[in-house]
Amino acid sequence: MESTIRIIQRDTGAWRMQVWISFGLAVLVCGTGLAWLPGGDLDRAFMVMGYFFCLSAAFVLSKYVRDKAIAHSDTPMWGMVVWGGFALAMALTGWGLWRMEINPTWKAYLLVSWLYLISSAFTLAKTLRDAYEAGRLECAQEPALALPASETAAPNAATHASTRH
Image (tube, rainbow, N blue to C red; front, side, top):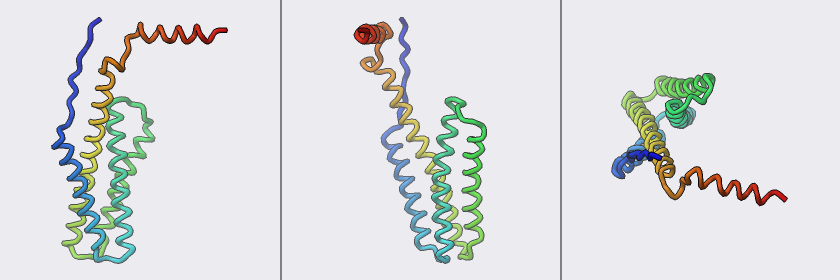
């Protein structure tokens, strides 16, 4: 029996720390911009909801794209819902930002921080998924966890034999 050894690459601790710091910084600058937004309460509430909608849509889209790369298990309608939800979230948030009657400097700040948040969310999702998949591969390669087929058949036979009366 020939065994195949897979080399599992993991992200460095420095990369993981940079990704988390970047995401935290994006949340901080977005939160600060929204908290000090000089518009009305309704505008502020719309933008907060838009940012959360975009953020959750970005995580869902990253999972969908990664899952589809591994196996085509989702229906085309689900793909349309995921892509449509992300496009709608981005479009509505962009529209809300564009129509707000605030200083162009504030609009630029909110636009850049919003795009930074979405970009860092995609990077965080990829980093977390890479770590998850590397952990699964390591568990599959662990000799103590993976019994040979001959050893797994024997306990099953004993179990079946003991259950017969």
